[in-house]
Length: 210
Image: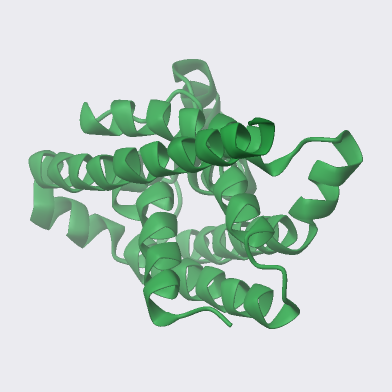
């Protein structure tokens, strides 16, 4: 059974990676032509897609690693490197390029339905979030533990809902500087978590080969 400290660690990690405050400017840009009712529909579809993607990763990620013959230590190191790259971009108050690039952002502005792509994936449930959920899942061998992980995922995703609904007042209230500060704080937390993942992977790897 997971202890409360580990549950808090999972929550903080996921909310840092998803960084819903950081995507507010992009959300406002790609939904600029939508009326309030259309935005609510877009947010509902986005949140649903994020929940499904992360839950599938939590309950099926270990089988995916086994299928490709990837050991968990290698995945920890690779996941840590990916998160560190994301964190470096966030510390510079930039959207990580592993989430989206300029071409994809411009294409998203022109799309009619942006709920699944790019909002759900890769902006929210991107490679970093998916790999992190798989890492947590592999460290939870018992089904009850995976259920706890699923509950945390749903809780984090539900927090995204009101943030996106209130994206305009939040954006106006915090301003670009406030949003950048929040992104940098999340990036700093994410960098520490990334280093921990890499160190754990290296430690287990060397223990198993000495």
